Length: 251
Image 1 (tube, rainbow, N blue to C red):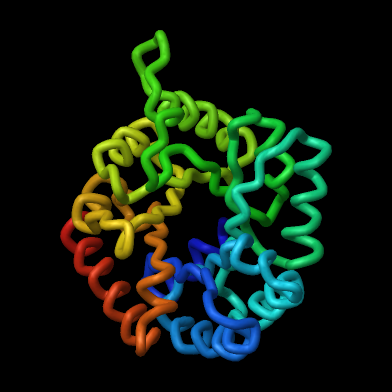
Image 2: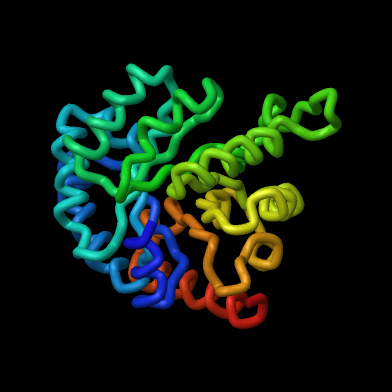
């Protein structure tokens, strides 16, 4: 967590650059380090999506190359949405942290604390799914208590963070009102926010709903809009500046 906080302060950015590489193996291998180098000045973190790497024969090697290409001081979040019982989760954690060498992961908490805690190593960070950017009848289902599953999940994650201190939430930008309710339930945790750009999330609404008083607490992810841009540096810089405009208004 401290690595992320230091980076946000040093670079004055909340932009998370998602790496969902499309194209041939040759093109992706060539372009990944270029995109990382071009966008690094504007990135609070990089987030390689595991599926886009494992679908390639050299996927693990590419992931290790991503970690090596990211400048020191910028966290790497492996977006694997891991979610299994503790014994299996431990091996996923070993893959993410010891084999690939990332700083954080995304986790699906459907199986409870067992699926989350093995990733909560000291010095590492976990973003657990609470309200994703897609329409999910499961997350939106109402419990007898009158709260949706997403908010029940958020409260469990807040309790885990109280114990471990390194657990945040994934909260999609496509439902800013829901994100705002999660912020009320989790007033200090960091949110990883997908859904800005190609999925249509509204940045202004998200910043108003989720930004912490100190100007932090949100990592705004952009993947396709940067990877597919003719000028990835310009796309990243433009979004970072837009985010910071709302930070100055909202904070």
